[in-house]
View (tube, helix red, strand yellow):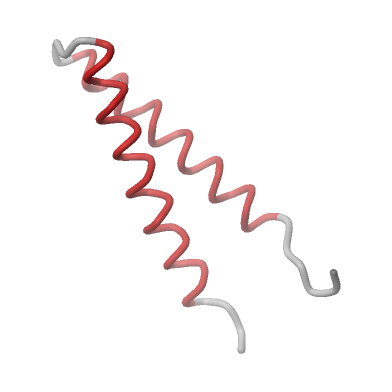
Length: 62
């Protein structure tokens, strides 16, 4: 477990959940049904998690 950074997975989870909430709320604000907004929020969450993971792995020291 030496060299394991606990902040990376926590940051990934926090960014994904915040993105889902923001996208869902914006979709509901613009008049979508809650079910559709939730689906689009989940898609946004997946995109944000993939983007964040790629950025975290690029900066990792060799």
